[in-house]
Amino acid sequence: MNPVSGYETEAGDVVWLRLDVAVAAAARREAARLARRIGMAPVRVAEAELAVTEAATNLQKHARDGALALRVTAPRGRAALELLSLDSGPGMTDLGSALTDGVSGSGTLGVGMGAIARFADVFDVHSLPGRGTALLARFWAEDGPGPLPDSDEPEVAGLTRPISGEEVCGDTWAARTEHGSDGTRAVTVMMCDGLGHGPLAALAGERARAAFRAGAHRSPQDVVRALHAELRGSRGAAITVARADFSRGVVEHCGVGNVSAFVVGGEKRAPLLSLPGIVGHQLPALRPFRTALEPGAVLVMHSDGLSDRWSPADLPGLFTRQPTVVAAQLLGQAGVRRDDAGIVVARAARG
View (spheres, helix red, strand yellow):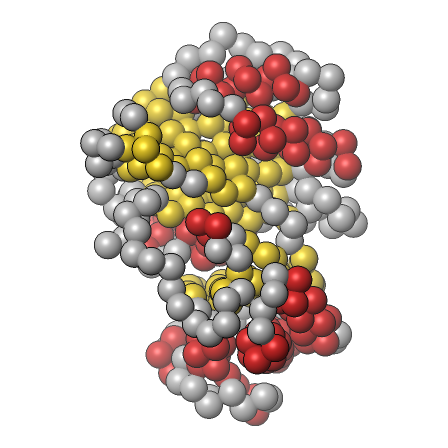
């Protein structure tokens, strides 16, 4: 395929705020700081603050446990403030009622989830009754709402979270989309788990991400070889690289170490094989693998900071949601706090 256009995206800094008595004030303050950093107009800053405060208040009033994540993203080069809310229960059985503007459980702010949806330029939510909810709200930096132009590029998003007690995460991801002159649409995705945790693991991840960004290699095994050369002298990492060609219905992949990767379709998932070794230290003889990618299937790759025992059948409706929500809900449902965690999700564009 001759790529004639495309774009890159990768992991960035995430501000994680655990559920506690001060989460609403802390979330409002961080949202305002990030919004102003990307040049958001004052009216939009205030709207984002209100939405974030309501999300935090909902966690305080309803969740058994949970967290907010705030970050700056740039889908296709357009800066935005992004809010993610994750909780472990009780979930919602009637999303339609919860999204009615002006409705608020427990009589808190009185504006409810509907106001979050109304203020946000992009909004999505997935809830599992009795288990938890993942909510996404995105606010563009430009003055006033407006979606991205229609695009048939693949959608890709990810999320990282450091182990409890650390400020940086050794897990990271990056992706490069390709738009071919023959109409082909594909995305090459890297998931990297730097060995251990803390600054040295994060440094390995940063080096892998930079090498992926700078490299012109096309096949997954060539990308892994290039990353191996770049990571020599570092702690090393477990890495999987997959190229999902949604036009032709196939994933080509190459992995070393214990990154988990799956193609999810309906209530089933197909694992992508990985080889033993450590990128940067002990590289095995690489070989590519190919897996079918049926229409509507989703590519999921994550580190061992998430249990790989999740099942699509136990997450009804999740894999029709935006990749960011898929990543957040899986992190909330399968993530463990005793290790860094990272996940990236890719799917074909929804027309």
